[in-house]
Image (cartoon, rainbow, N blue to C red; front, side, top):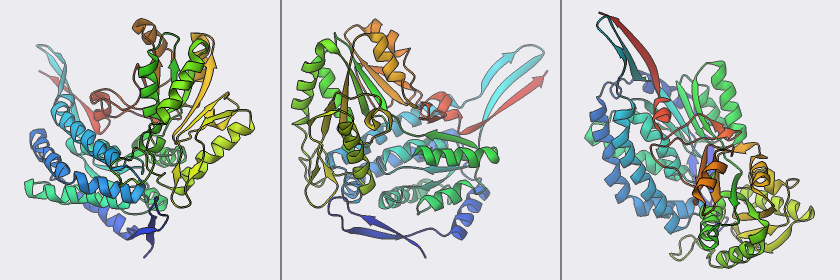
Length: 458
């Protein structure tokens, strides 16, 4: 039996080994999920009651989850606890909102006819998630898939397998409240297992991951005409206008660029700053960066742990070297920390341009490249000069102007005077190579369901 071998990113020693799920077992898992109709037959009120019981279970497991994330993928304890807190809030929101999102809609109702839009579960949903937010990201898709009556097969990243196992334990505890057997099942393995699962007899795939994985899923799903949602990362810009509140914008941008060691799809990856405040903005960014405590993720004072995986550290170093070789200036950080572990300094680069990888490819690290612009039109053009379009932010005291610029930015979520995170009830997804489909909102929730038109002649 093949195994997953995980490395502790703080020590570079073997953390744990896990047996991969065999292909035969995946076949059986999918078959059992297809046969199970017990969950879909429950009313939305029953499903909400059962799923809401996850909340106290997660609260009880908060410390276990935080410590596992720290050991398994290097997330600081405070960041891990925060991740559990935000998914608890998201589950509360889902339980409150989803019933109204999926209730029947009466389109026409006259003396002679009635037209109803009815929503039904798709069947079996495969959820494949990344390692960077191994609690929030998968549950943010698993919970709506379940609340809408689907059965879920979950494959966590091979770099956060243990967290996936703990999540599976959470759903096992739900069985005492009436959660059916085979409504949630776990697959352990790497990319090959994810590919085998997607090509199996499932009805829908949700992937939060790489562009390459998304392209493979789109190809496989389209050949079989299966539904899919893809969230594939970003190269998210922040535009800082001349009238921005500098202190607040610096604090928020640095936080959005360095949280989870910069390993977030919605993190600030490019900053475009008006020339009149460019130097002051850089100075303030340096001062804010100096406050970040990098180190052992098990230390309560640590803000930023190591990269979760070695290849991510190597990619960030490559992007920084490429930028410097092409004329960028290293203002702060830019170096690996220590002999052991994937620790890295938060970094600021200036004099960057769009010939550099750091401004065009997803870096996924705690790096802020800052580029000067002359006017709003140039800033908008630069922000849109990307193959990605997940999130973006505008920083200005002129709210009307901020909204006007936001409408011109090619991204799924554009924020004014804040950056990052999603809001339940509002759509989340990307333009261009950042993905396909939406989650979290009414239209996103309904993607987990088949839409049926019932036409009645009286």
